[in-house]
Length: 138
Image (cartoon, rainbow, N blue to C red; front, side, top):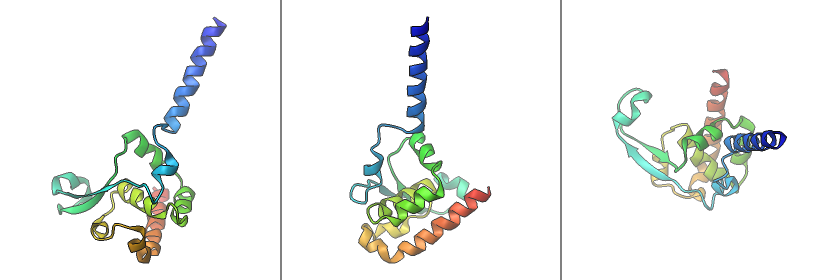
């Protein structure tokens, strides 16, 4: 009976730890400027019903599960600020945040590299600070 309870407890701990950090993604590679994978999509008004007026716009699409999305949405402001401040992860983090927060991605149509984005980096960081501040107030 003790062995059964030990096995059951071990399985529960394993499942709980996997639920907190999805293991199928190498998070360091996920946030790497050199390996971030994304697509820019033009979405129709019906896909934007929660955003108010029906207009077409560009969005960032990243292949991630709902579980991974929820995991990232729970990250605190310090996590995002650290990744935005790091020259190895800043570009990828900005792209990921655009995807998570459903922000307009028109800029990325003609600006596909970190170097093209650098002139706008401080503006984006300020935008994310405002968004994080608003999210904390909710």
